[in-house]
Length: 216
Image (cartoon, rainbow, N blue to C red; front, top):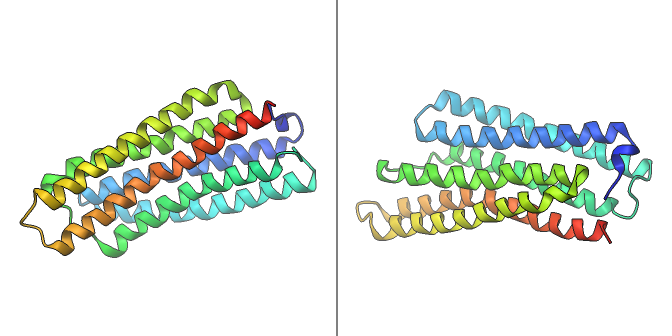
C-alpha cells in the first residue's frame, strides 16, 4: 500500500481537498441539469458559475500535488501513475463543467414525455461518478475497500449505457412529431450525460490496475 500519508501532511490535505472539489463539481452538475429540466434557469446559471470555479480550483490543487510529489520524491516508483490517476479524476470535473456549459449555450428542447427518462439517466450516470471518488480516496487510505466501490462504478456505468440506448431508441422510433434536427440534438445531449459515467469507468479501471501494482 502507498504510504504517502506518513510522509507529507501537506499532500494528504491537498488530495482530500482535491477529491472534495471534484465531488462538489459532480453535485453541481446533477443539480444544474435538474434545474434545467425543471425550468429553474436562475438556479441553473448559479450551478454553472459554481462548477466553473470548482474546475479551476481542482486544476490548481492538482498542480500543487504534482509539485510536492516530485520535489520531495514522494512515492517515486508510482508518482507518474498516481498523477495520471488524478488527471483522469480531473477529466470528470472537466466533463461535467463542459457538458453543463453546453446546456447553457445550446438550450436543448426536452419534451415532457422524455424528461423522466432523462432525469433517471442523469441520476444513474452521476452515481457512477459519485462512487468512483470514494474508490479513489480508498486507494490512498485502505485499498481493501477499492474493489467493492469499483464494482458499483461499473454497475452504474452499464446501467447508464442501457438507459441511454433506450432513450435514443425512443426518440428516433417513438416520437414522430419531433424534427430530425431535434432528435439529433436529444441524442447529442444524451451522450453528454452518458459521458460522465464513461469518465468514471476510466478511473475505476485505472484504480484496479494500480492496486495490483502497488501490492506487488
